[in-house]
Length: 132
Length: 418
Ligand SMILES: Cc1cc2nc3c(=O)[nH]c(=O)nc-3n(C[C@H](O)[C@H](O)[C@H](O)COP(=O)(O)OP(=O)(O)OC[C@H]3O[C@@H](n4cnc5c(N)ncnc54)[C@H](O)[C@@H]3O)c2cc1C
Ligand code: SF4
Image (cartoon, rainbow over all chains, first blue to last red):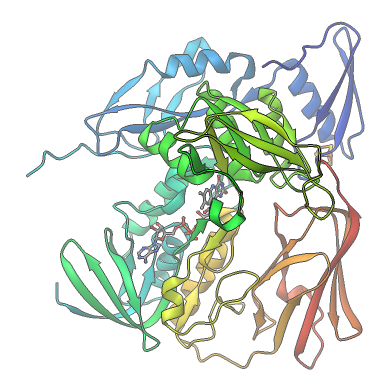
């Protein structure tokens, strides 16, 4: 989010998270060309490319559950979502209300914020039974 | 339901450990399997871990905690395992008598095998002795996780987190996403405790500062927390005079470790290791009392739910097979560089997995197996960190023909920083 964006001919240090080694990568970007040094394997290059050109994260949070045994429904995106739109995603999810029952895997929002990615429920929540 | 219940296998605790153990005991052919859980829902701590990172090894895809639990609840639904929720175990006897209380009353189970899978609880402020007043606003990270993810409450507006383990890192991200300011994550060690991936995705993604070699040395505030005093520490974790400074915050989260929950295990006469804080177990997760097994976080704090599932399947199979146990052949001790090893006992070298936690991070790591002065096995791995257990198959080690006491040491180039 706040991390500095690459301009033309820029250096950037990244930590590769593609495996537990956690190599420190030095990425140099000139125009569209990105050169990566410091990784112990090929995957570091791919990781740096993705992190610089199109960083994405799977988003998880909760939304309001109505009439359910629990008050909050946990959700996630089905695919990694653009990192620079995380705030938009969180703001949008505060407007979503779901009625019970809901099943783990149900689609809650399709094509969220026009990104072509769905939001699914990650837990089954039954209807709240009225007190006897 | 009668007051007295005869059962082949009783599993205590319905988290991922208990669910996997009950499932595999049933698959192994046990006729009556009971799974007892004191909460309303199965799943244990997974229900509040809504972030991804679970199940890559067991299900081959990355799930969130509640999804992982759902998968197992579904698997259990296809068996004859009798699940009793809102059922707390109050007492255990070495004769494998189990006393429970639930909304339907009090029951006494008589079991051929008992599997302990009660999980762990969090260390609190009292256990780490932070001086100062006792204002509101100090929570364990797991309690805050419960409040945010299950109840939908935010614990405060401005937060300091003590401890850079995964639960602390995950909460730093969770709160940042919810608009809470995270002032700093404070870590007494000179290196990160949690996973590098969590450092990147939970701290760097949000520009959150990590203060290594620092600790909280004071609490400020009367009714509500107003801030904490933070100091640098030396190699022996003593605060360095003159480095103390004030960080304003209304909430302090403690992510300073977990302790296996073994109050009732002790009532059954099971002895606990001072290192794992759980029962001494062998490669099938049998304890030192006949017919009692312990798996998952009650045996030792595991970082990956996938590992919890593996060891619990093993315990479930063994508990259902009622095989007579052989003699203990090897007793494993932790040596230099090793924080923990589980299991601590080996009866049969032909099965099972050793989980070893290094006491600090190393590159170019060697794991050394020593019997008295003789090194009989060395294993190499490029890197190890305290946040990830090293896995070694027991049959892959050239154990010496005579049993005895074995010490496990870890050496390498120490990792500092990240
Ligand atoms: C606060 C916290 C946060 C965590 N966050 C993560 C994370 O983000 N990622 C990760 O990979 N791992 C995390 N872990 C580790 C996680 O606990 C393990 O991966 C796994 O959930 C352990 O499973 P378990 O079944 O052994 O224990 P648990 O999931 O704790 O389940 C134990 C169950 O036993 C029940 N129980 C206890 N005592 C009794 C009794 N007397 N009678 C009846 N039932 C009883 C409890 O109610 C609970 O449901 C976290 C652990 C804690 C404590
Ligand atoms: S560069 Fe290769 S070895 Fe290094 S962290 Fe990335 S995936 Fe692992």
